[in-house]
Image (tube, rainbow, N blue to C red; front, side, top):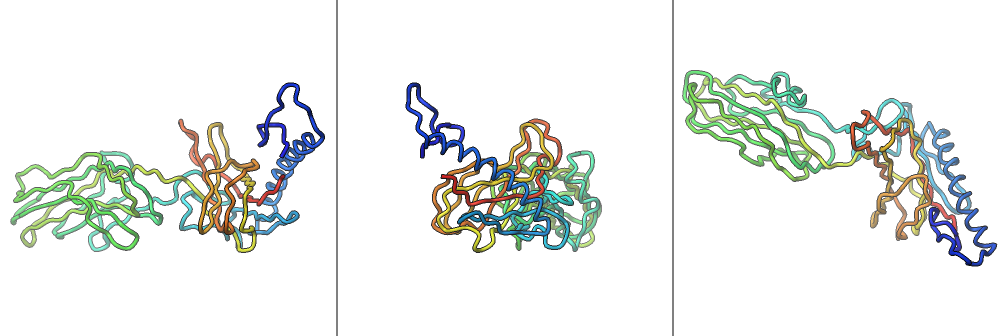
Length: 333
């Protein structure tokens, strides 16, 4: 290769070095290919508002997906792996995996208060059940680094209360498991202070849910109250869109890639990156609108993952957002 510009994958000229026709030709071809693919990518996304299409250029194939609400759109998107939020005709840079659960046999009042960031509001329960709890779950494995928790429970009246524990539980997608006893008191009565936990718990585990459980042992009919004020998790999961690449689109020996989003909302400092994944390998995060050289695959890529990254400081909610993505097995040599 004799490309003479390091910004497009070659080497800059050295003073007094000879210039050959091939140098000029290869440099022009690289620049032309990048511009041509960028325009072609955006046009293909706009033209496939009804779903996935295969496009061909010589021996190199690709596909484009447009995000919409109509039938046939987003058919390549793996919703179970996607953490970005879909909004009408675009994916935006906010998480879609927030939700809450409340134990159905003993529901808490105002369960959403545990997510509002306000320690003056709370989810509450008052009654006689031996166990009750409130928390949240989501559909993807998520690495939770820490959880800010404020919770309390009090014995309210007559009868005997032997012990009381505030538990943290985690969820694997099907089963809740007791993880840590956050606070325990024995032989509590109505004159004793409330049992409380108010701290940041370092979890550092992959899970699909967290909840606070109040477990009590007391005489029949003895009342108690429970409150959860705050349960805020810190996570490291990227905001991504996962798309399946249809069979037959790419060859098994892919070693070059060109990807292009159709950007809807943008601000300085935001970023969009993507990677190709096969059954045996994955690329690093790649820049869009760029001719990327990648380690040669031994089997065809079956997934493209697009990452939306908001700017570091005071990002506009939902920025960046994209309306589609184009991926191309690019041969520009």
